[in-house]
Length: 285
Ligand SMILES: Nc1ncnc2c1ncn2[C@@H]1O[C@H](COP(=O)(O)OP(=O)(O)OP(=O)(O)O)[C@@H](O)[C@H]1O
Image (cartoon, rainbow, N blue to C red; front, top):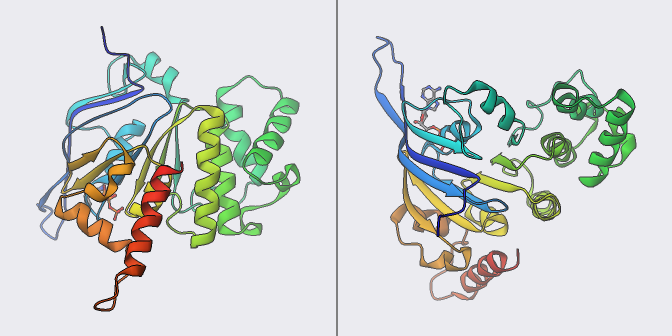
């Protein structure tokens, strides 16, 4: 039987940068190294790794905004860096992003409503009236109220503004959202609220996520599968987050250790509890 078409497929993706330096010769940095991965419709792939391992570069490559030197990126079967520009334009609206820093990803001079309406204006033929109604519905979908449309970014808390950014990202009902450290700058309580929101929206709107994070605990809440990056390459994969404690690569172990609190000698119960919580998070999505 032929394999079903994946929503996203990366084959042998390579990207390097020149590090700069005073003589402009700079060291070559291999930001992604022969990366291949795939994602089915409705799935969430967690992409973890230490700082500088290439996660955000890979995220930009997936979004079609950072051309790799080698390899292919197929989204809904369309090569995002291929020659068929019309086909690329057609699928681009199904690909959205939410970044870590919500304050710098919105225009401070636009109201929340105007920001959320931008993709509707650019990609749909909706009348102004219908755009307004759609903005109100989107705000309610992310747990804000339609009246919040009139507020400016500085009038929201970080968590509320991240909800606005999520509303903008889902405005066109995309098939895939790249969440690049989307909860990292929020405090723990707000983080778990936004993770719950993302989890609910994913089911309601049947979306897929690539969830980029250095925080394995946050990833365990949302992801179905895991890829661990190191020095531009994928060094370990999990097909189910229930196996999170079987991670064995030193980088994976370090990321796992980072979410377990340090223990005084001879006392392991707190660590056991943290491990149980992590496993529970991976199972109760
Ligand atoms: N535009 C660029 N020019 C030069 N080097 C770059 C550029 N973008 C990324 N790099 C380098 O590529 C490597 C991977 O960076 P990337 O931002 O993808 O890592 P990351 O895993 O997302 O890190 P972080 O978690 O700190 O954001 C790093 O060494 C980085 O310095």
